[in-house]
Length: 607
Image 1 (cartoon, rainbow, N blue to C red):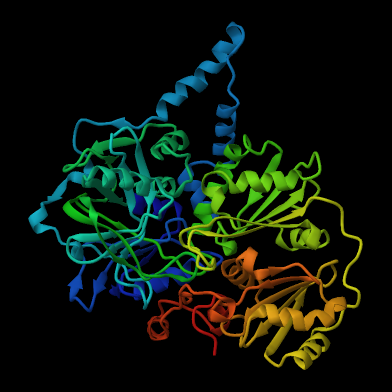
Image 2: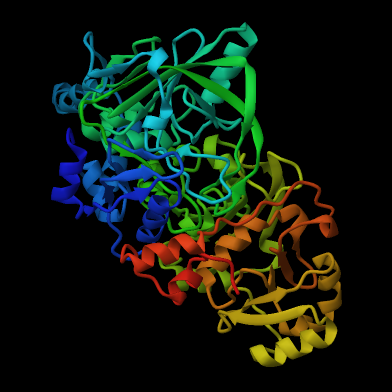
């Protein structure tokens, strides 16, 4: 992995584009479209430019490194399940009894020495070129502007290395970094993250906080940066465990933070605890813009790099994205770490169109009544699992969690209002649907029991049911029913919203013999024929405490919220590509998409 580009040529079917392309919108749009293809590939852009600033960059941009499951597994050097097995063995390690058992344990214990990062006494390849503070110019890096409404260019694959005030804890996180000017970056470490906790320590002490940002190097560093490690554990321990060799770290030149010797670019600096600046908006991995908010600012002290650096970046927005494959690996690797708190957990899945923290499905052995509810509390009370908004639990007789059609049928045959659990808890910093930032509704479904006895009393066709609804309210403009063969068909309606959907729910009570589960979405920018993106919309837009009604049938209001709903926060917009950019790239033959592709993934606003 010393030469990632060559490795990707040999192992990842690397696509190379030699056409001069703009870091503002053009390069991100190509990568965004590529990652949505079935045969997605990593891409190297050899001639990035910034036409607005008149810059031709000296380094290429590498994107979609985690382009598919196959390449992700190759980056690990093994299947992520194999890593999970090793972690499971480690967690179950017991003192050996007898000479033979002790001898058999020696190889395992010996391999653990490779887990711990090794601090080198010399400079690394990443420090071959040193740019002093007086010459620092972030404009020399091909930093991308992904979306038209972004607040500026953002580093999207920065490995952010920080340490606690006493120096005893070090952290690697992956946070977006907004470029403000030639030597300042916005530090979007969310309030629940370790780096933010370290910042609190420096702030209380009135001291500037050292930060080192690394870009590139072994792609496994990138994955480790987003791994949900327990508080206080340095993510590079995970690197050593996966690689079975020590991560080799070198000291930053202007602070005491250690970073991998072989990354491509290093940005060192300090954060003044007294200074913040408005960061954003930014089109995020939720598929929505995160809104403007004050965050700390890093002043750059120096930039170092390899002699021939490569600028690694990712693009986020609506699913599927590169994080689909990174998240798949995370999901597999961390299964053993969930089992100590939920020992009867068999497996879990966080589908990418549920934006990971918005939807989790879990399979478990149920041993007693309320067992699934106990698991829900366990999930919502620990680490990053506490950000999960919606949790669906099935028993061991359920289909495989990745068999979406049969799994949905299994759950819907076991769904009833009595098996829905709604509570309140912490939500992700990026969540936009809760009425109060950081706190919102949680929904759990216990589908571990037998099938419910009663289904829909009288199933109507889509046309007939829509006609009846429109006789009640003309603002209902479209209807689609899914899974009509189950006890709880999913009835999705699109509306031109003119009032609270609670009032609509009351009006539709006369149709209760035709409906078991009703989902309401806005007509604008929703395709009722696209269940993949409907799931994305619903789990993003709902707050279970406010938007779920259980009588006379289960209703989920997944419309955009506003004053009709007593919602006072600003509601963010979708991430949309810029049509002129797509047209230009299509004319050049750099992308090949049709109207169906554009609509399927919501690339542009619907006509």
